Length: 312
Image (cartoon, rainbow, N blue to C red; front, side, top):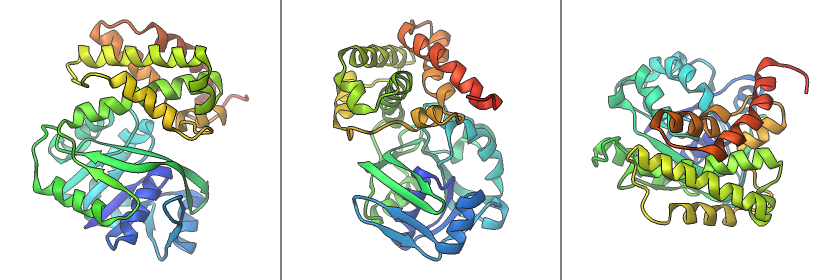
């Protein structure tokens, strides 16, 4: 397959690197020093599953120059999806598919507005990784996995083709769940509270899960997301909160979310698409979310300061 990775950061760099190493034609859409380093030295990946280098690596900051592709993996931050959805149009042919791997539950809908709902296969990714230096991706933990599928859960050849491509790639587990919407929301139930409580406390996973007060805060935030999912008729099944807490318990002691790292560094974050989305969607659905509301209100000044460029 010819695959475009739109956003070659921690998620896109790792996934695209694995696909390229498996022999697929991957073009990375990146920018700045990261793009320069990939063009010059290739894409380097450090991972417990094995280090490797993709060299040469095809990379560009011009989606039109990339040409038509079979699939676009959208790996930008959640707040960059709308802009990316417009920029990727020159890469899309009549049979191209678009798969979002953002945190949150709104990316697929935003992409559909620009590219057409028939092209979008909702998806999710689980991984702890980041850009360690220009041209270098560091996978720090969590066995990398992706899930995606048709919005109506039909089994199609195009979804199967992308699944086969991922299964060619060592170091990534791929699957098509029975209910992709439920799978996306189950990740949301984990990541939004974990990111919010982590950013609020300033502590990594080991602190958040072991301190009774922060663990209770985490559990209550998760229960509110579960209530929200039910109100929106998303069926997560029994034990969803327990599974999310177990996932937090399985993380490396020093693990943090990208939202937490961004807020701590004074960068714009995904606050509005994680905790903020819980609060906003709960309000729309007539569901109470007092815990997430408090977390959001406490973090909002940091987000506004980052976006307005005010000194820390």
